[in-house]
Amino acid sequence: MVMLMLGPLEREVLSCMNEIEQGTVREVYKHMRKDKNIAYTTVSTTLERLHEKGYLTRGEDTGRGGTRYVYSVKDIKPKIAKMFVEEFMSMFGKSGVSALHDEISKYE
Image: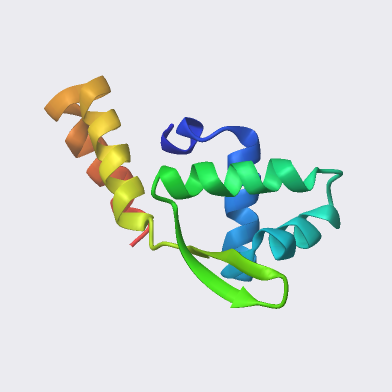
């Protein structure tokens, strides 16, 4: 569904970012290397793509070695909820709303 708009690697990196909340490319890379053989450049590119798609914010940190980006997780729940509802409505229309409401109310 909505998360399918992200590729498998993007989902893994986003999951990692949800665990560490913020970090540089190197920090994310080190965290991911514990479970997966992945290249530093792959992590860097994926973080950039997630930033461009609006899932991460990015700031700069200047320290020894120069300037580097620090990525943080955005509160994407409203964005994902909106995308989910739009996708659901395009598939089922208004007739699906009551069924969705019934299912959601089971979790309240």
